Length: 158
Image (cartoon, rainbow, N blue to C red; front, side):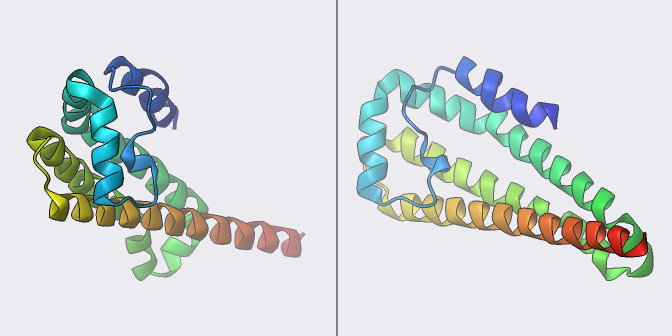
């Protein structure tokens, strides 16, 4: 969990990718929005963003997916013993990793090709960004529902 805070607070700013809000923090974006953002970044900002996308931002999704997976295991541990299928739910956060990696690779290719437009890659990146946020939201929803059920069961058993 501490590493999940360390990456955005310390490691990402150290890349010097710029002060603008990165595309991967939006739910989705159009090619025009992406190219406007890339123009504002400038040559150095795009270079730093490519470096970050292909290094620390490839590790970060694994870190927070592991944290979410462990949280699911801890909240569902009694249920996991009763149902073999539920253990696969603990792997769900790793769908976030796949979406995030695909997003990073698409955006890195788009930035590398800039100023040439690669609208299809931007649309793919935006789709992966949307999927990433959807998987994050679903994982948190599952965690909240499981935690609520666990608390309700504990209160009922008292």
